[in-house]
Amino acid sequence: MVDSEVLSGQLLANEIDVVHESGKKDHNIVVVNTCGFIDKAKEESINTILEQLELKQRGKLEKVYVTGCLSERYRGDLESEIPGVDAWFGTMELPLILKKFDADYKAELVGERLLSTPTHYAYLKIAEGCNRTCSFCAIPLMRGSHVSRPIEQIVAEAEKLVNSGVKEIMLIAQELTYYGLDLYKQRRLADLMRALAGVKGLEWIRLHYAYPHKFPMEVLDAMNEFPNICKYIDMPLQHAADNMLKAMKRQITRVEMEELVTAIREKVPGICLRTTLITGFPGETLDDVEELKTFLEKMRFDRVGVFTYSHEEGTSAYELEDNIPAEEKERRAQEIMEVQQEISYEKNQEKIGKIFRVLVDKKESGRYLARTEFDSVEVDNEVIINTTKRLKPGEFVEVRITKAYDYDLEAELV
Image (cartoon, rainbow, N blue to C red):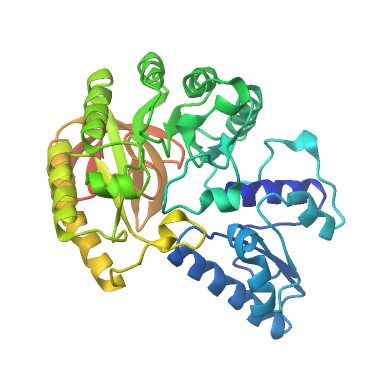
């Protein structure tokens, strides 16, 4: 999404009309920005390309360009299998795409983006690539090694976003906690957070994709120091059984993960911890799944997402036999989510009667949908506000929770 926004910003600066996922169908050129991360994402990318090519065949489009991870990884195969595409571009070939439009890459536009999100929140990419060697992950093959962006550049981009109306920024990278090691020879995520916390008008800063091994605890000090840094960390743990963690090359044990989570909660009371897990990794047994469920019941994470294992060529796990059928992977994922659903319901029940400051996202079916600082966009809980008062997206209001469900809350204005 961020890459698409950067490309759109560059095209716009070159006086080329550009729209993100236009519903009007009045465009003559389409750029499909693909994902090549897991099977479902690849499938969605291929289907989108084929849909656009069908429009081209019917004379509704002149050109179809493809960029992004899938293009980076499988360009040779795709060129022969999908011949109708006018040009293919990799993940780092933005200037080449612009050349197709007789446009110049404008270096002075760093941070200028055409947001595809509502104007009150944005994702902010602080680094590109990854130096980790997780056995299931193909990201380093598509995105290369970790490259941090300078703090000053990130702060300048945040200031531009805030000036355009952004209230909440979600920090993203393939791996946040590695930030600064390549550029400054030390982990500098906490310093970056402090610098961003000083941006006037920036109400919420949120951390996504923090790696647990060698987690920089000073990040938590920054969280405690500044009220605009959300007490929220998204830390993908992937599994809890030691044999699975070892096979996944996660560089951490179950005991170390439990100690880390306990230490984080002690240092930042009330913090919201989100994690993601993988089911169906080669060799996973039903005992491993039981261990994962026990781990969830013990650690009681606030938010959990579950992916089924995707067998990716070029990764070290590709040498293992993908021996668990897709339906069984899904069944295990469902079983794990049922455990989390109950935990989520219990945690939400505890919120009834409490007052929260929430950010209004949108109005839908006559009701306002908002989020607390403990909820990220699209993946976490929503707060449904029942009121006749007119609220604006991007507005902060105080609400009292009146009802709680598995993954949503209902509230009234205070």
